[in-house]
Image (cartoon, rainbow, N blue to C red; front, side, top):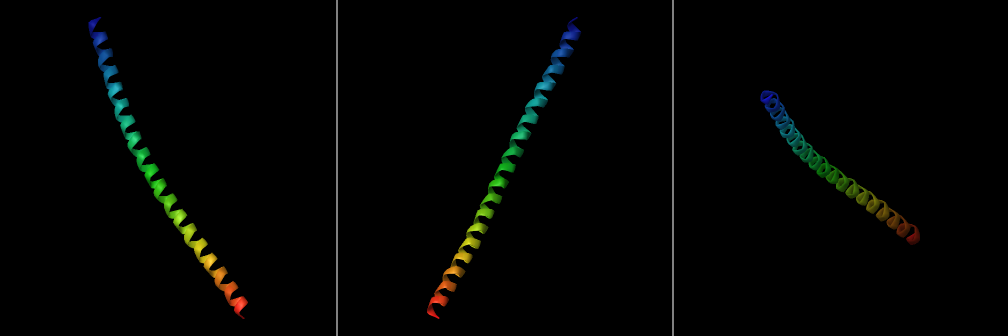
Length: 69
């Protein structure tokens, strides 16, 4: 009887340790994914601002040329 109980307790310990390792791995990958997503979002917003600024500058300069002529 004791051997069966001991085997179960050892087996359960291994499962608990494996679960802890899996949780740690998942957390680090999630953090990396989130950081990469933030960087990509920052790049997208920068590109949008640059395009908007170029369009606005072009519009203002074309209106200025139109009213001068």
